[in-house]
Length: 244
Ligand code: GLP
Image (cartoon, rainbow, N blue to C red):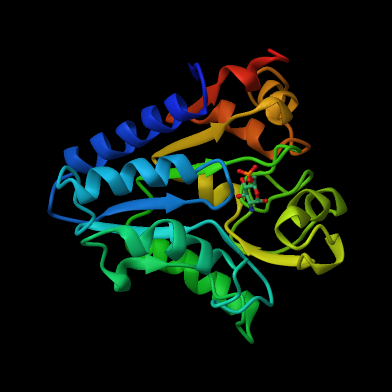
């Protein structure tokens, strides 16, 4: 658990960690990076973009896999995770190859097939080197809501009412406009990664942080599974530490 004073410092620490891993990686195969959406990673993306544009960090040998996508939102919808990732990150990088960006297709006619292909593509790269993530206030990783199996793989997920209410801030404060389902990597998909780096910031995540690192390992708080992972790092700010 890495505690930084505030959100900005947490993001700088996480971005530097990711950059160091990418730089230390050999050229013989791509560095495979798992990525999240949400407000938590925005500062990390800004810092990675800054380093890339300053010529300090290349993404030419990086392949990315995003965690999740709303089912039924087209790429151009301003709340799709495809749109978020391009708007906040990929479009600003100087040398990210579009063919190296992987995001689940929320408009697929075959959700199960789409998820199976995603898992197979991750496996074809030899797995994910580092999965960056955030968590929901209920401790969900990606869209693996409370009581999702800790061994789960990429698949279709129902969103809880709580999550739809929390995420409605991006949908005109109307939970009914938030898609009811998403495609999401599984908890097992995340924990198969060599390293997992989870960002937890702000007072509203204090209970989730305590459950993640001090509670029992339980599918009630899917993030708690990281206690069993040898390469898991929780990067947080002081505001999130109120319940520790
Ligand atoms: C969504 C995403 C999660 C993310 C969570 C928290 O539910 N599917 O991957 O961790 O939001 O978002 P925020 O960082 O905005 O609190």
